[in-house]
Length: 235
Image (cartoon, helix red, strand yellow):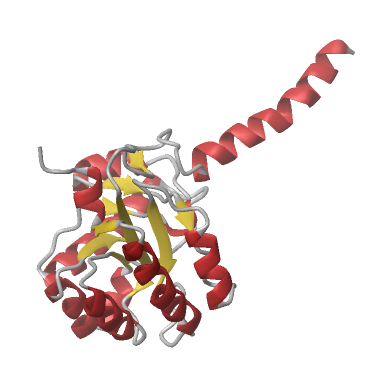
């Protein structure tokens, strides 16, 4: 009887531990991953997932207005659909990261599928933009068995986030409040300039939120960097 009770109590704990390993922002169980920089430097990184899309140029114009760099975790299939926008982000001085080729949920998938998704996106991004990504961000933050070998072979490090804006469902004011009320030095902020592989998605709340977030953080003395600059500062 006691053995059955112990097993029943242990099961939820095991599920929670696995959930954290798969999606926990600080988890490196499946592969090397970073979610923020060490404190002590008033630096932050602004990142955007799911592009490029027809909405990305509006963000590029806004970032150019404030001379702020960002990191765009791009989907390979979207780069093929909008190569000129992908090149524009790179030409403007922004960093490009790997966000897989088709934006799948990698839970329970095979290692060969995982590697193929990131390898294809890596090749497409490098060929179209001239940048070879150093960082990847798993769609939905889901990592799985096979990530470690894939990252080692493609020379990629996982980049999660300190703050996620939930901009796929919140209005601009709520997105901005969520970010501005939580930010501290060393943070990586995650927003979206697309919605998966949708070709025409509404990201106006994100654009409006960025219009509020960037000048507010600049006024508070924060300096924006790419993920590479934030996590790998020059000595």
